[in-house]
Length: 72
Image (cartoon, rainbow, N blue to C red; front, side, top):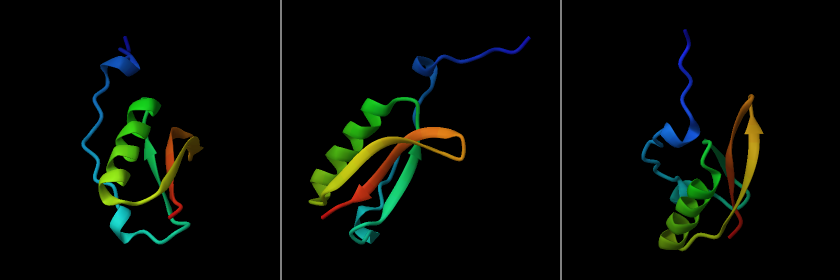
């Protein structure tokens, strides 16, 4: 029997966002099932770093997650 975990049971790893090494137009992808929480974490981190970013829920290689672009 295969046991499936619900998204609410999954724990996210601690992420380190690469804002300092990014040029305007660069992006990175974070696989996650908790979109709102990840977008909040990215937004909070970018504000601390004084970097402007845009986040969208996207799919990459059949994995759903959040793509973050540096815009300023």
